Length: 357
Image 1: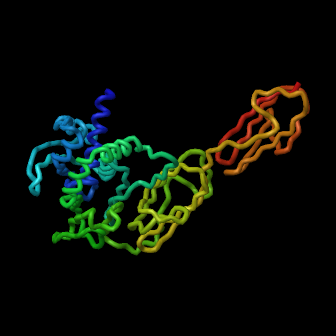
Image 2: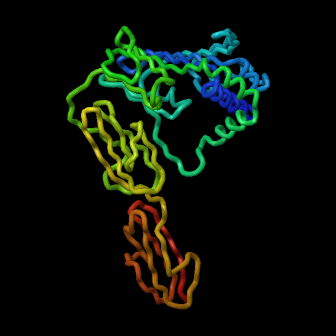
Image 3: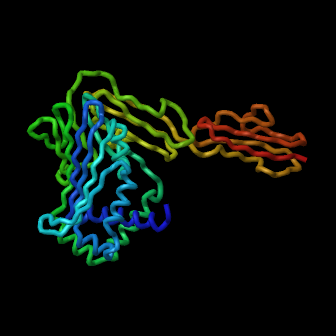
């Protein structure tokens, strides 16, 4: 995709974020789910034309918006119209599409947000993927664009403040089963739930329970194993017969059943379902190579060398010098070429080649 098009699409996303977070706009989503996980999805976004024009100088056209949405949702039918909503001249964008199963539904939602979706005969849940990142956020460029667009545009801020009262963000899902418990509002048919994001104390997780079982089976962790060491990031899916009550990562309770962890650390994770069944797992991520002293890679020495090595993460698994296993503190005095390979328990390797003349 040409750079100009990418930048234009980024601008549309920025404007959409401005409208959704700060202005008198609305985002109404209606979903119908079948027993096999398939269903239909409809979303209507209403954006103030005043806000849109103020933010873009009138440069964003209907075609630009449609191109952005068709890149986001290739399978969607998209229509755009100019209407008056609550006395405000607005741009109304409607997207309609079908999905074949819950995995495809999850992918559909993840085009815009990183979300985990679970749906079975017992419960439905939608929660953000837990993905702590050190340093700058990967979406920082868009966040910077958003901050710049808002912070440098007084007219945009004034227009946003004036229309804040009209903000609506709602999601409605009609399930094939009767709902017994939810953090949304059950409708008269007993199967439809409406979540009003402004009224939820924590809108990050949506759930609906269809039946509560007496299962004593605890949640399962998929993607990691107890006591293992990893030298890359790990993806963890917490699967459960019953709705997850909470997941605890090193003492921090999170609203997610899908985690991506990449920071070096020893982890202790707990997961509990609504029946009180609890699972725990411990593992370590170690991406640092072992430390070696006494010899430097590529160096030539005229005297004996005492080789030492250590690893503060997972610990040393083995050290091999010219094919023979050695321990830290080994003194090498014979003339010749040497290759030392030190491996830690996570699989990180440090190789040092040196010579003694």
